[in-house]
Image (cartoon, rainbow, N blue to C red; front, side, top):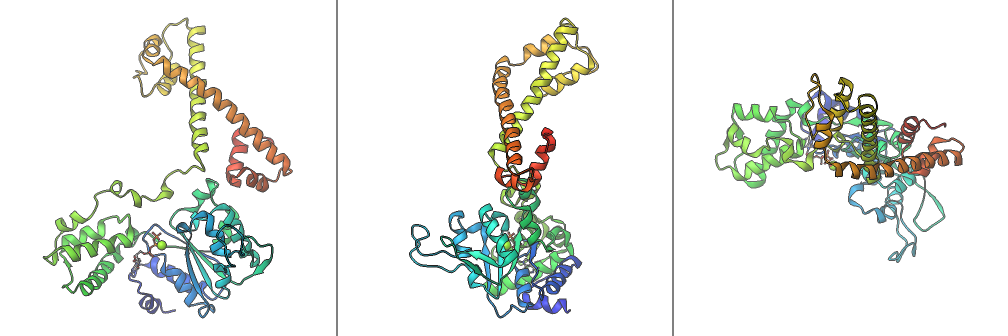
Length: 408
Ligand SMILES: Nc1ncnc2c1ncn2[C@@H]1O[C@H](COP(=O)(O)OP(=O)(O)OP(=O)(O)O)[C@@H](O)[C@H]1O
Ligand SMILES: [Mg+2]
């Protein structure tokens, strides 16, 4: 396989082993009909890979349709992908073919797959497994022969944990994973990309290309590029347009580089943050934490008043005080402290508020346990179906069963 020729054909710059490997995998998997999942941070260059797979497959004379799942409103995505029948919904004035019908014999690229609504994920799984689909508003089962390639710039395992992405669909799509490394892990490619972009923009704007001195080059290579190749391309374009002096020094480059990631909220990688399936989960988390604090507090107060008659606190109690009041007071662990001082300092109104929440949290927790039990009973202990009924992932259900010690 001539990887260099492929790069030339598709305009891919770079020579790092991880990039070459990703290209090799794409070409190797192309002649098969296996599903491919491409993952990598935003701006790493994922979009060219499904085209390589399509062009090197026997489907290359068939259609290639790229769909950005994140850009289609939830209400219309089923109809876009699978089509609809006349009268299926208000405004459906005629029958419409969906992309899966249009791309029969070809390839569909589903970009930003994490944004696909759960109901559409069910339809997608079916078409992947059997080739069957049903138009919106119809009951007739149709057949299609489409190869699916998906891409995501978020770690799908977080979406699975949050109950937003079906685990079975993930495994079905991820038959062959292709991972595109962030630009900072391909440092040798940074300057090659810069030079190519500088040349392209010089031609586009009819100006001499910008050139970097040694320090500027070092700065560029050592920067961590949170927006990856897209960011490098944009910055090269800005400098090409703005700087009259075409010899670029490090201080000049620095004015174009945001000095840390917090300046770039849109580029912060979502998979690095904990995600919750819904506001309800956030609320549960807050309430459970409060309940834990409350139990500790009760234990502490009881201990103080029963065993010590309000005298000095022990090391053990100081630990709890520190945990409970960490933001409000300072506890010196090795000194004996008077509990009265601390409790007096603590705002009594806060404690009252907390108690109200705790009442609520207990009932929410009970409700959740009850619902899990009911769902498991209804589906004869089959977790997969119970999880579907509850609208959470199987993994989340498994965690909750363990957490609450539910017989299952
Ligand atoms: N190796 C490369 N050689 C040349 N250009 C590249 C390379 N990698 C990326 N690019 C360019 O960088 C830009 C961003 O790439 P692309 O759109 O494929 O990113 P992406 O991984 O799909 O990001 P997102 O997840 O945000 O959609 C495009 O203009 C693309 O042409
Ligand atoms: Mg993209």
